[in-house]
Image (cartoon, rainbow, N blue to C red; front, side):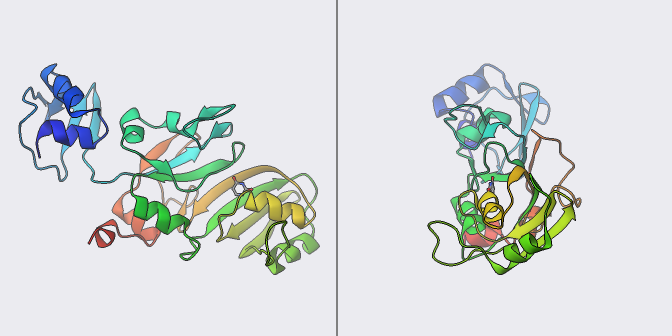
Length: 244
Ligand code: URA
């Protein structure tokens, strides 16, 4: 692939901007400045350096972000920072979107990608990818509340009762919940319907990917990492299969 085209595909700007970057000596491959924007490279596995940053070529990008509180999952946030400001500009420019959304005050694991099939697969109700949350509550958690969460609670605007797949009390005011639906404010709404109130919500996992069991690199709030094929496999997603 021609270098200018290759850089454009990775979110570094228009073909013209990418050509200018190369001609200005900003791009290195194998430690050497490349100044021919029309040079041909095999993109598979190619790494290149721009402004001291090392990038690796990828057809599609998959990211896990540890979302901090007070960030909105929106490109046009209303009152806070955008989660997209936590990612490098080229990743955003190539169109990475969050897989569903977390509320502004919710912390924890958020996946992002520019692969529409992946976003659909992970958020689709059919595939029922589980999400694990830890909810700190305003009131002490009772056995009755846990029973209600497991049996199902009625929510306004829903015809059927909504239940958690798993619900367990971890501490006086702490519940761990596993759900397989992605409805708006789901966890806060079911806990409210069960008779308590969420004061803080943290997502520890999506499917078999967790911030806590070593399935992802260790991350602090605001950190992100690329998801590798082994991570996608844990989510039951095979990018190569999907593109066939
Ligand atoms: N459920 C909620 O209520 N909020 C979130 O951010 C995620 C799930």
